Image (cartoon, rainbow, N blue to C red; front, side, top):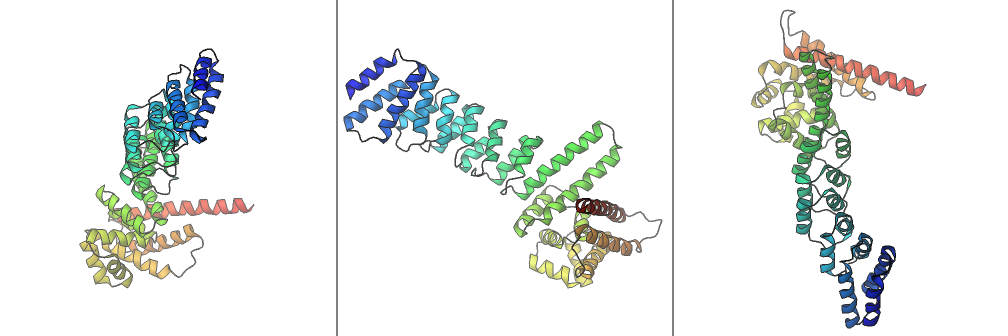
Length: 382
């Protein structure tokens, strides 16, 4: 065997790179999968180790491809390969299970986009590796990480990715397809999109600045409520905490939620603001006891002027809950209009009330959405 290996080394001095690559790949397969004696294994391993110095990338890539998916590849060969040029190292970095997570983290810190992307494409990416990638990885590598369904990413790391690349439409679209994306980050990403659109409007002077700011805030609230519609209790709780901590859990948002019939979000918000259990809050909201409900609003820190609006919203929801909700937009429009009619009676024409303005704007927006939904339905039917 040693004579054959000696001939192999001599032959390699004059053979073409392509032929050396094919022969080296065959030699590595013999080493990994054939039944060799101890002496034969030692000699073959030494030959492969020496071949790592071959000047041709093709040869070293051939070794990398054979070793990448083997649990029996010598560790020193694998470690030599990950220190090679990126196009060689990437093969092993993406597939080999012999590389430690700590070694992957070091490579992310010192590596280039090619090696980072290879790591992001691994069959399974641990939290520590993902954390390093989210913090310092290049754009393409982080995009590959988000594409990888088996990449373990913490909520904080998702938030970091949103901070770094949330303004890039391609990245944003992929992030939103992740089923494990925290509700708070999902909200942040969609809100960034709304901000980008608002900045476009401002840049082109398509709207007065005051009107633009109002539109952005209104749209943000609608984004929040749209996300809340599809969220479970755990996600809603997470979203409420995030909104509260970032100053976005406003009276206007809560009133919009109540008017749209999203009592789940409304009740979880009240539970968070009052420190009471969700069960108790739900009982007070749905119990329709005026004094108990107002005490709850007071404890939540809601302005007293808004209490009647919340009462009317909750009461109207109970009155309409049994009605046909097949057409969601139409039902929401009917409910908001009823709330608005009852609430307007509390104020004279001379009074300016921000909540009344909000209700009127909300009714207008829902009417437009209802009209759009009506046209889409009939256009599709045609």
